[in-house]
Image: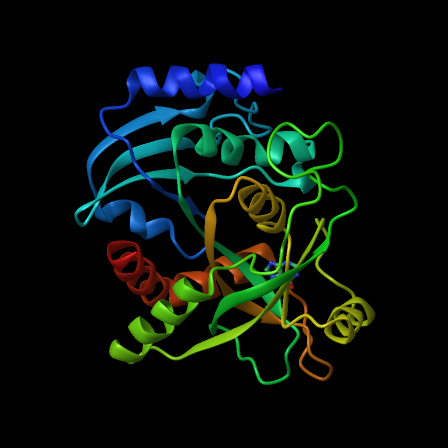
Length: 268
Ligand code: HPA
């Protein structure tokens, strides 16, 4: 595995003109941030040795290198979800490669169902912490580097959270903070499951992010995450939910999320 990571990293290094210390996983709600990247250099996933192979033909995504404002960045357009059938090693492989490339800070976004009764559809939630509810741990198995028992006491950088709160206030953007529960999907939750996740301590539940954030912490990469609440898992407010509605709610929140991320990346 370590050999594969190194092989992938050296392939990318042979193609890179920059040495970014910032990586972005362009999840739901951040698609349009791509339009603000300048001096772009793109590499489709299928050209990258050892990168997971897409389950949907023609939708495998790409790595984008370039500048966001003055900052050199690398961005993943398209991530690998556990529910698609990828192993945890595959889901988190790009983050391990990021570490090898010298990435210091990782920015992630996602969509989630709000379990906090104060939340509304379209709200942005800065992720302050997470609960790992995936059936498999991404660090299970031989420890490749770093600590066997990694610390997770500040999985999401407090400094970046504070900066993001300032940016939101400066731009008149209302944001929430809360705990994200990552679970495998692909079903959305039953009302009883939403209730369970609330009792467990979650403010929102989604199907991504937690594996990548665990591996980033293990690699001592600083993390900032933000989630768009696309539906509500709150008793009395639960209605049928579809992927299209999730996308639609995320699109409405997209400009606010893009502003926060762009400014935060520039200042970090
Ligand atoms: N549950 C899980 N994942 C999600 C949800 C949800 O309600 N909304 C968007 N992603």
